[in-house]
Each structure stands twice: as C-alpha cells, then as structure tokens.
Image 1 (cartoon, rainbow, N blue to C red):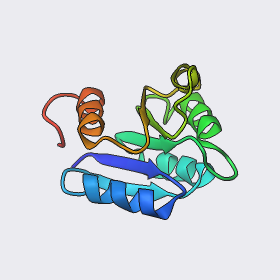
Image 2: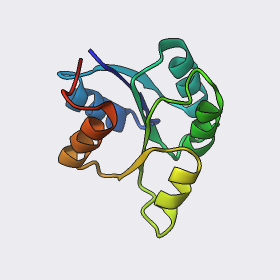
Image 3: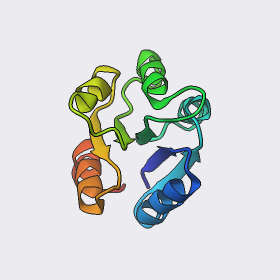
Length: 124
C-alpha cells in the first residue's frame, strides 16, 4: 500500500484527510514542518500533502528542505493551502511543490492529483 504523509497543523483537517485516504493509502501525519521533515526522512512516503501555513517551519520552507535532500527530493509534494491569491500557486511550485490544491479540499481533485503523481493503478 502506498504511503502518504499529511503535514497539517489543524487537527480537524488532518483527521478529515486521513479519513478520505485511509481506505486506499497508508497515512502518516505530522502537525508542523519540522516534524514533517523528520517523518519524511524516516518513512520515505510515496507522496506528501503539505499545508503551507504551519507553525515554526512553515510548509514553504519544509518543502524547500525536503527537495534539497537527496533522500527526499523525488517525493512528490502537493501544497494544501487556503492561499488562493494570484501568484500563490507559482510561489508554491517555485519552492518545490509538484502540485497545488486549495482548501476546502475538493475530494475529486485530490484523488485525480494523487493518481497523476503516483502513476496508474492507484495504490500498490
């Protein structure tokens, strides 16, 4: 089963994502950018859902750090954010995010992006 790391500081949002994904993916969670980096390095998930507005090390910086490490640079990162202003998606991609999804999360869009980034056949 493919592993997805959810880095989200709001417990309700984190729990909602786990509920959406747990039937098809193994889920790991982290509540801030620093612990998200640690979990990613330790468990090497197949994909990371990264909230950009996190306490301490924010999602922008956590993504930059993950993409700078040889052991995590190839892990796809989808930015999950309430940042929906013009230029925010480009900024997220510039820091290393492979895709971008605004909150509230559209379940169909989320699963389409997961399928695109994780390849055909869905969970393995």
